[in-house]
Image (tube, rainbow, N blue to C red; front, top):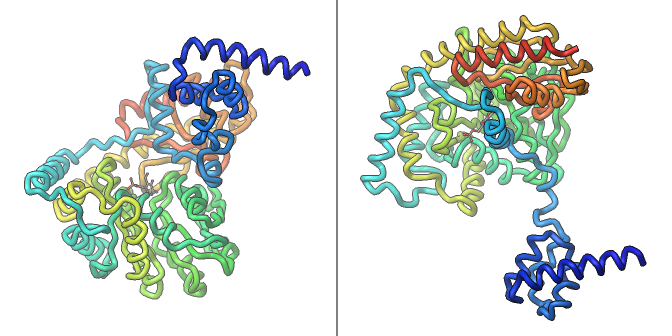
Length: 465
Ligand code: PLP
């Protein structure tokens, strides 16, 4: 009774406000929707306004969730969400350091100029129409050449697909091959999009934790025990985001030995950081093992190698049937990737590759600085990775301590939040990548920023008690 009176009172007040605010037009419905009121309250209000309830037709879903069932299970991809956090935090903290930003400097200016010219030429020449759904022949040929030149792999152009970024290619691959009940083995720490893409495709991500002691890499033993009759894919990523871990040729061969005995398992090799390796590390990709080549889809792209993240070109090579299936998904979603970006990607792949070792040296210097600085801090332990531009230090030694506001750090999320709040450095908690007790730092930023970041992290860790 009491609550009925309350509801009636509430409805009366809202009616009064809305009655004066609105002129009984369709806008009323919109305003009511924007008030986020429950459908029955909206109906009562509209009735009292003598408003035609049938206009609520589109509102039947107001109490249902707008998105499909899977959306709630999916997290925002870490990169865009990190940028969002960074952006809003940036406004709050004037002296905040952005360690997430992918910013290449070094010798890429010349390259950038030639990419821009290729794109401008494409525009001027009228290469601005639809292309073949999964890429122009010119780009496919450049990709075929790339695989031959750099990986000693032979493909024909009908074994190549091009999408709007590496992520798009992975998404299309999973959408075109997975059925309900299928399993995809994902070694953790993983790139955040893998499990969510698998979920979106209606299948089950099977996450296998790879400890710091094993260099964050999957062992043949763990692989073997995680394969079931339902395993459709395993995803390998070397060099890795978020750890920078790189599988040696021998380590890949050890995994391959298991996979050769499991012909129902396909392999997605995400090689996007192929060109960012250090200390003379020799990159090896699993498609180079002849017995497995037909089971492997090798994904790569121009985002990281050529600092072309915004151009959105990724590609993959694999079995013709899989490549055809990917094109089908793409044909009913995005159609071809931008014709102009494709022209620039041809230039990137066919043009000079001189800057790659120069850039790797510049990153190597930053990696050394970051790893050494972190290992000088009590409670932090950081492995030295051989690729990508990330480190994945452990903060386990500091969990349980209190920050200067008296807040107890219960886990890695508390650690990164407190670091951001107290010392203005943004890093990402390891649990976001499937391994708790760690955090990820991207050192794709200037040395000056890294120096500031390292001294702030040290200061923060020393302030914990
Ligand atoms: N794979 C990994 C491991 C990545 O880190 C990223 C981007 O951050 C991608 C794939 C996707 O790259 P793209 O920008 O080409 O979609």
